[in-house]
Image (cartoon, rainbow, N blue to C red):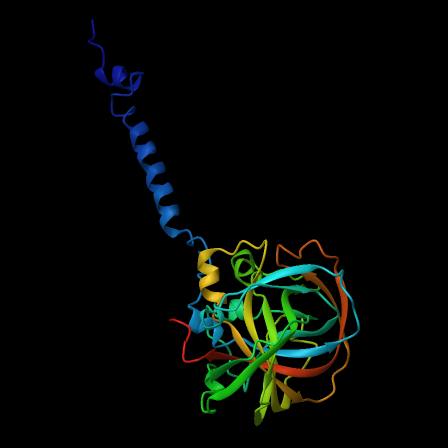
Length: 308
């Protein structure tokens, strides 16, 4: 009688321990290798945009301010407190939101575009400015220009007078900033005070729109910058919870507002929506830009410069 062929037992071995069964672990190993390869070859997830330093951000916030058609918002009462350390000794004070006077939008001067990591924030700094009133502060200040284009200008000695405007963050035509940008710009509130004397800059600048809503509607224009008119300083509205890392940044945003002589523009109709939590319940506003009126440029007060 013939002896059984041991290869028949191996071929039929259901235990997976023979040479044919050993292919199962090899298949598992191959699958693991394939998964690991996909993990290494897949593109990295997009990282959140980091906040710039106070110096990097504030140095490139240049706002061109346009006259708008008349609009009166609901008469909202607000309590404001100064954020910048130079004005930290001034008391909290109450204002009432009055008529809208202008819309200030981000621009670059002489084609000096904010650097990467800064431009992504600056291009969404849109501020709608409303009339407010209050008592004069009568505080002397020395202003130093921060933007590279204007650093050759001498320091400017002014006296802070009465508040005239409150400028608050808005979105235009439904274009809301990305979340990490919104977390910063939604807390930028600037109270604008009359200043004396009205120092003459007397400089011609080319202004280029940065916000996507206006880049195709308002062409680059040459403006003549004339006299200083106001100083806009950062304030906190009661009821607004500002994250500490954001407060450390917006507290350094001071804008020296100069009058400008600018070419005529084709009127630009817009819809504005408030971004700050305290005013987010206000209705959307129709606003038509009719003419450039002012240019706000970043400054430091009394030698206290933004860190970074």
